[in-house]
Length: 429
Image (cartoon, rainbow, N blue to C red; front, side):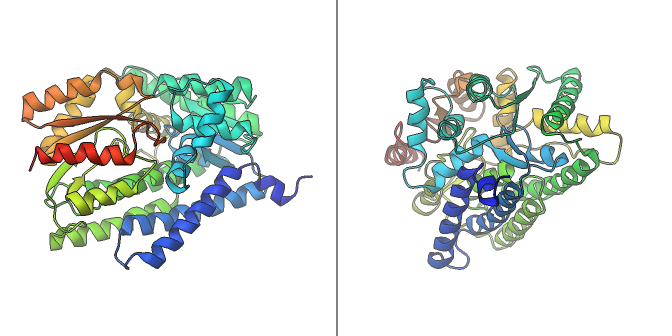
């Protein structure tokens, strides 16, 4: 029989993550003033709590289930298990570790995986080459991109981890939502067979209902962000993305948004801006620099540039009906999952993302867009130019395009980011 230490060593990167997060939290508490970057302080507190609970579950010997970020984490609450986000592990460690996880990118690259695929998966793939993760099962949708479909084959065929795939429709219609509802339910049942557990769908209802409450608070926050100046700091974007990916469906996630809503309301009433003065309001329709989220604070403090939202934060859905039968429950889960960040934008034609951006630009009174085109996200390859033309033609709003890798600073450094944005900002002021 394995010892508790051997059990928890099945998820060594999560132990690394907890250690790095705890060190960051200690620095934040010691260095920042009491009201400095509250989203970071509050987010670290609740994410740390969930990570500690996750590691304790591993210590108890519960099965380790890896999941794709595009499968809302609360969907695995129907099992007694240890949920591990494959993409979140790579990018959160890239954020917190000095030098990020570049050595793991290089490990899987030297193994033979293409350099131009997504670092969100390559980091974890490199970790499994050194047996730092030992999954009992993996679940993933076939969305949002070719990198997902290409990379998850490695886990199934090279590492022999039992892998269940939920087939995600391309067209967003009612029949597609019904089909995907069946796929989610089937996938969870298949995972249950692998780990010898019956999925507890009544328990699932409870955690889905928590996210309904989170949605209500998040919607309030984004209504307040429409005001000038924005009452939320830029750091809220990466922290809330981490909350969505790691602690969705938990009481901690609800507490995080509850505290952030109270802070946002206070700033709204006082018309105060985190950075002192807001000069430029932006939307980033794609991703932030996960390899250096301190960049968010630099934009606030040095340029007075507000990031009102990015792709991981404009994910709103209808509350899921948790009081009706299972068909209604899974249909609601399907709609949410198909509208999840990046899934919504990648599994349909480009028209919806263009329409969404035009509408958001109007609703949030933005001055410009900044589009970060990731090397791996080839499904978005045509979007930046089309979106830039649409924003200019419809609203007269300019858009800056920066090519980069979300998790690897070696492609486009933070220094280069600052240079490009500084030059762009000069054309606006």
